[in-house]
Amino acid sequence: MKRLSIVLLIFLSIFSIIEVSAQKDPKAKSILDGMSQKFQSMQGFTASFDFTYSDQAGTSDRQSGDISVKGNQYRLKLPEQEIFNDGKTVWTLIETPTYKEVTINDVSQMEGELTPSNIYKMYESGFNYVLLADKSFQGKQVNVVELNAEKPNAPFQKVLLMIDKSTKDLLGWEMFDGQGGSFSYAFKNLKADSSIPDSYFVFDPKKYSGVEIIDLR
Image (tube, rainbow, N blue to C red; front, top):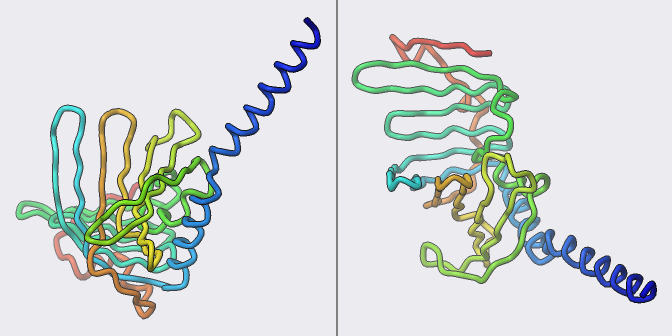
């Protein structure tokens, strides 16, 4: 009986090792590393994008916008909203026909959120990952990598990354919050651009007359 218990313990130990190693799929990591290196080599890019949101109740929203990214800086433009992030400060501008306001936060206050700049390295901590079957996305063949949060209270429990098989560009991603909400982004006209000045990612109140400033720092 004791011998049987030892054999069972060894078997369970081996199974646990296999299960743990499978959480970090080496094939997926190779693709993710290639995507991250491609992003760093561009030293900046611009793109247009489509954004779609849906929730468990059936509510959905679809918008299009423009994005510029340089290192950990980004500027995101939507029809009535614009986000400036210079790597230290985040300005969120809401501009409608009836009012204008900008909310200011430190980047540290936004910790844990997925952004256009950290999406390229988010897999490095807090997530397990696995390579799924290839698919066609925007007319291109892509590797699909699934990230799963290690913690049950993470803002997003699952993220799917669509990575161009030939160029290693990140063409889009889908995020799931675990409560029925899903957010998807699809890049279009992605172009490398390392000449974007740092000032482009800083909100200048002089260019927006009549805007109400709400500083939450």
